[in-house]
View 1 (cartoon, rainbow, N blue to C red):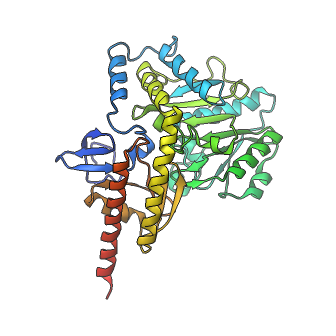
View 2: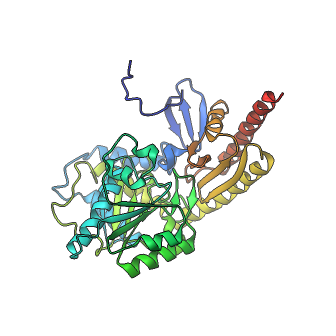
View 3: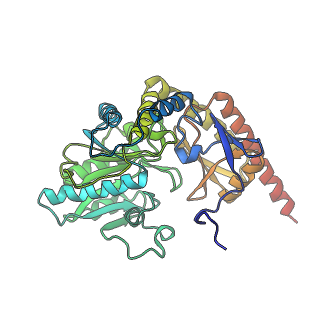
Length: 397
């Protein structure tokens, strides 16, 4: 018999009732160190006092009105993002998937309105993840994402990861845009080198192709900059944001230059809940806290401490871990044993991690994780590796 909740997840045998900073409390009262942060969502940890206060204050005033009216909280957050980034304008969504849908529409509408309606093809990359709508899975193109869901939305060219020659060859007079994650999350914490992002920016500019960055997972301070592309010193035409921007409250956004957004006039797109007062009030507080230069410096310092410890784990447990990947607090451990075994072994040590492609273990803690919790995380991961080594030894003849 099917469960009341549609069984599209292989759920862990855990349920949590409360969160405190980097810790989750289970139904039985046991505490788990959360190194997944809701998959890079709880950027400021669980139950951050400032976010709780902001949400409570707004909930007592206004929850929802509709985008047929001005929403002051939305205006404020949009102005903050415009001031902090390359963007001239922002549209708010409820999720990264919805942001992907708008980014695709915006890019195609741009060329249509510029007199090139034939420019509809969008280039994407192996290992990408842009959400689970029909458009987003067509953009990703992997068998795991698309099998059984055809016919797929046409108009996507899927290229191998880091094949520069293929990118140049794939851009034609039919090409509309390139969508890329500066750091792939689901794809295994794979970072696009700065010089490659610069080269891609130059290529798109030379060919009139729009460059779209998907920073749903790697944005909002996770890399040590407010957005990961800042490390390369380049800017996109359109950017997708979600996850961390709401700190746990559902919120996404599409940021764009005035030129890239020029086709999106009244009536071309909409959202019932996108940019509602509750979400935008929380998003503004999250953005205010994370965009502070001192906060971002602290993220980089914590990341250096965490990464150094992870390198030590790789050296100490070569039969379990192979290498460290990533930047900032978007880190990954390339595993020797199946990464799902590491995740499951972590449950007994009360440490929570997230699996990714390429047999990588994702480590996405709260950006404000205390140093003591980093030390504790390394200790628990060390114990997990020792447990797995013991299991390996027990299987030997």
